[in-house]
Amino acid sequence: MTTIKSLEDLKKAREEALKKRDVKAAAGTAQVIVGMGTCGIAAGARDTMKAILDTIEKDSLNGIIVTQTGCIGLCEKEPIVQVVIGNQPKVTYGKVDPEVAKRILKDHVINGKPVSDHVIQM
Amino acid sequence: MRELSLHLLDIAENSVAANASQIKIEVIEDTKSDLLQMSVEDNGKGMDAEMVASVVDPFVTSRTTRKVGLGIPLLKEAAEACNGFLKITSGVGVGTGLFVQFQRSHIDRMPLGNLGDTFLHLLIANPSIHWLFYYRVDDKVFDFDDAPIKRELEGISLTEPSILNYLRETIEIGIQALNTSDAGEKINSFKSAGEKK
Image 1 (cartoon, rainbow over the protein chains, first blue to last red):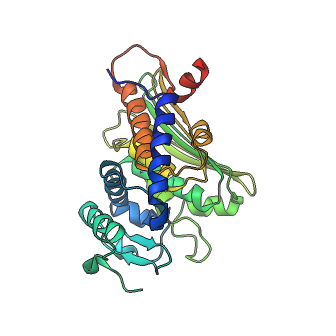
Image 2 (image 1 turned 120 degrees about the vertical axis):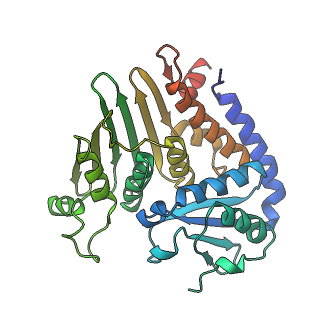
């Protein structure tokens, strides 16, 4: 039988996040933006999003903000993911399936090395 | 799109684009009346009657003025193919409500798919919006309101791994409970936990 999550579970989760956040604060924030227009969703953006969230959860990656955007006019390149790290310029990726999404998180967001074969030149 | 939950994600994005601060998504499966109903209600900028008429027909609006694309017409067509319909009520400055109904047992009805992923992704990716999710299967209900959770978090990001884990499990367990054969009961993990205090 499954157990229902309680308020206490949430308090524990919050404490854990607070501890980790203090450690991470110096490294600067990373923002990951997933294109969630009709075109993106039809091309599989929800699976891409799921891969990103699963990787953050499983690998305990702190300090990453995941948001979404609508159609940015590059429907044929969907699913599209954009990455902004600190003050660096935004990097836009196209044809991001779940595997590519995991590479973007590990290589670019964590290790600072963009996944060049999926970068879209804007 | 292959799943109704993907359509819901798409429709909810329209509400996000309409600058809504509160969005309520309802999904009801009723085996007795053989209906599957879904609705998305927002308090966004709304549309006038002319706009409402045009968003359901992709060939009437021009690219520059429309704020929604093919998403609504696709869902409308899917509903009408299953003895159902799609209805939009909207008022400028009031918000928009979209309601869609299917014959649940219709052979052409798309599967609901992963409703939990749709809920979780909307919640995580749009943290400034107040989300309300309601899913009922006959007499079993999953009722989720993110307000008490966000109050408790006091600004901690929803994408922190431990918070993400909490939210994902809360939604997954809540939805799973509707599809088990237990006697009908109201699953409302957060509120019931809070009330015991």
